[in-house]
Image 1 (cartoon, one colour):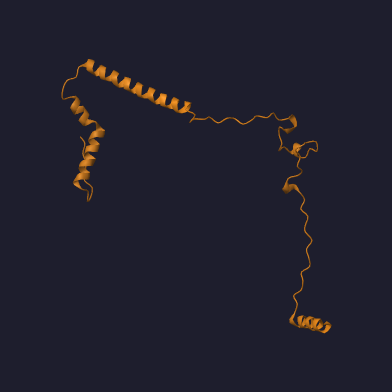
Image 2 (cartoon, rainbow, N blue to C red):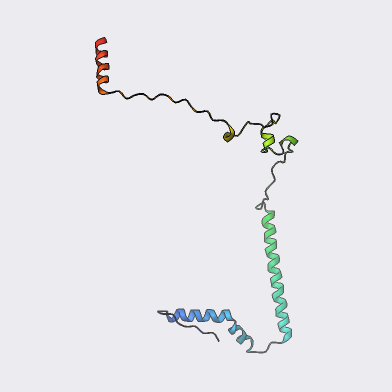
Length: 145
């Protein structure tokens, strides 16, 4: 038996809507309609075959649409890029042996973290000029004119 209980503040319309949804999902109404009158077993077989045929037709139609979609150049598979053969000495470029091998044509030298970093020579910082020495320089400049 299907039952529906009202929530707080729920309207009658939403209650009826929930009840009808539960009834259709449970299949009680379909069973009741089917049992109203007798159906011969041959009719049941005929309906089952018709349903099977319609399922097969639907599946075939779907497959045809997919094939048309692929054949109309809308479906383009990725083309593989050019495959160039590698020489034997370049099979493992990142190995320690190849990186330090002087005969390796791709030898770019040591990696940046392996390079020796030389410290930059620091320049001596200039001392700030005091007010008195600034005045002395200005007086010397005026005197030279």
